[in-house]
Length: 439
Image (tube, rainbow, N blue to C red; front, side, top):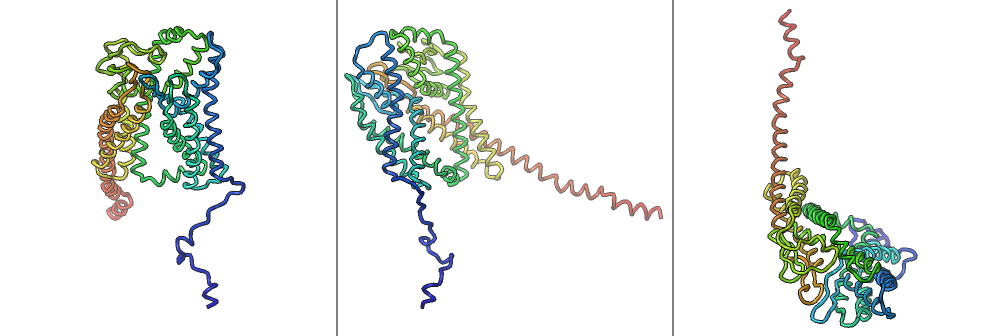
């Protein structure tokens, strides 16, 4: 009986609970909840520093300003809140267009916060990364809701629930990504995804980058050719150098929005700059446009410039990129062409989902009245991108797979024939026959 109690259990007979390794306790690790609260508050303050510095600099150097600094600080808080997808309620309308450039900067800060919190709390697996993200996202969203009180100025009223939801979503996503990077879990998650899904997602990302790249080129060419008009918009401001600098910062913050709008134009549906307006290949119907430098390339009406029509090639290029990536990866496995074509369609659908989401994030309301609608329609952009890019990707991937299968067959057929020819031409078989004949 004593031998039975002291005999070690074989490894094969152990239960999963006995086989499980104990959770590693990192020396010097701090409680995750307290680390998350501290890192979240520090990240929120660090993010607020940028708009506060910009607005205070503009307030100090302005040609005409009052002695009250409270409106300038409220404006900085409003910029921070809008970048977290918080709407500002105005008299008769709202301001809800998100500066994607500023949101990307805050996303980078939150990713860094996730890495720092994971390192300080001793996180080492995926569950720890998720709890680290939650420990940051919860206090970060509470801080955003509290800041809506400081962001009230005159008739401007930020929405607290929107602030909580937007800040929580942004913080959770990017803090978890940062924690996963710190714990070296991103590669493991990628390997856990099936190979077919990875191939489709990779093709969709490259195709999306192609469309966005065409949109960026379109915006850059438009701003270069209308530089004088953009400079005139800046010169019309009455705030002097401070107002010009503030306009430059706002233009950089909203540049990704305009790039997404140009990408929506390249896909087909176009975008709106006010209610009952449209900028598309079918025609340009605009009214009075705000004097913003980023809107300087817009034509006054009628048709688009001839150069803009080159952007219509973007869906074709994106479909070719996605189809080539899908066809090359799947053709080596000798799968049915119809199955590979379906993967091309799936890649196009993924591109449509991504571009539709970007169109939704980049659009919104600028002011009450006619400026209540700016940007593209998310569902129109997503549907157009999915159909156009999906069809081209399906055809391209099927063609590449078919060509690969044909090349494989032609490479395999001549092999026996070449072997027989080598045997027939072997000189060692003919020399003894010649010797016997001479003998």
